Amino acid sequence: MPIIVNLDVMLARRKMRSKELAQRIGIAEPNVSLLKSGKVKGIRFDTLARICEALDCQPGDILEYRPDHGPDAEDGSGEG
Image 1 (cartoon, rainbow, N blue to C red):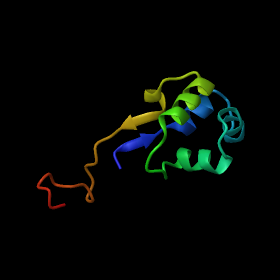
Image 2 (image 1 turned 90 degrees about the horizontal axis):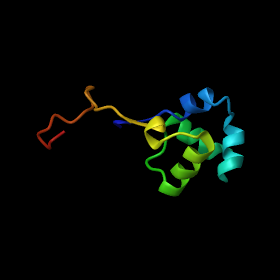
Image 3 (image 1 turned 45 degrees about the vertical axis):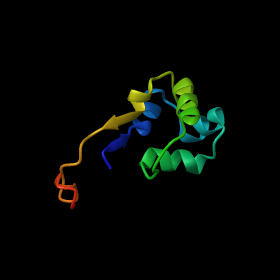
């Protein structure tokens, strides 16, 4: 997936643990771990807003777009 989650980077910059973030934003710690690992298919905007508020950052500090160019990427023909 071309969307990269940099939540672990922001947590390190803010010297905050996943457990503290989970408590501040009101979600379960395992869900924060899933977000950190990028093993989620989406995130609600209200959750993203709470994360940004807790970490004093912008959504672009957490989410990054990197186009897929690996062997599993589509070739643009619509047949990939």
